[in-house]
Image (cartoon, rainbow, N blue to C red; front, side, top):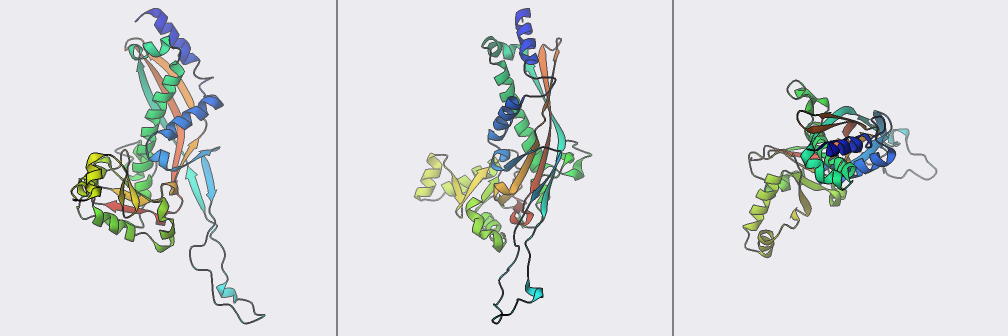
Length: 302
């Protein structure tokens, strides 16, 4: 590794940030690439938080508001009057960190083409997206002693507790999907067009296999291609890091992922390991807008 290459690497890294903070343009580019990754984060509703904590207002009616009309010139009894549900969803961010090692020899071609900063941003967005998805999906504060990262916050699977369907050790099949669809509360059925079955890659393959066994056009199409598979009119979508024993039936936009916009980027190098190090620090939050609109499937066959 020649000294000119090392010098160019140092210059590129020093030009990446201003006093450790991404510029507004760099922040926008970073978050666009992060959210564009093919993960749950890309399906969920993402918000940018100006502060570590953010309140999102909800307005709605949880139950019937119509009553029989009163006699002429009479007011509805006070006991029958209703008001909207004005609750709030609280996003509380936690500090997370991604560490990326970039060996000199991997970066040589990128530096010679003067696109090193783009390479760094792409690599960082890919790594942070995967780490964020893991926390958003699998976070559980009860395991902080065994996994400090996942123990920082409760993720989607931990927060979903109201509607749970036990698959009883079955593989993902039409009966399991049917039971999950039936577990959806009536007030959310009208939104089923927005719903998805979020499953592991292994379960998506097993479900495909069950459809391919059919001696029909559907079975032929499944064998011949990788088109979208459906379950009772709802797309079955594989999600990175979803446990094989678990799945979700939900509107992905009901999952709120918040990012604090102040991203800290620090760089260093290890001359013995011939590698540069980039440490990215940010704050992330996860919440469910309507927890009872989620259905969790458990105890699927691995």
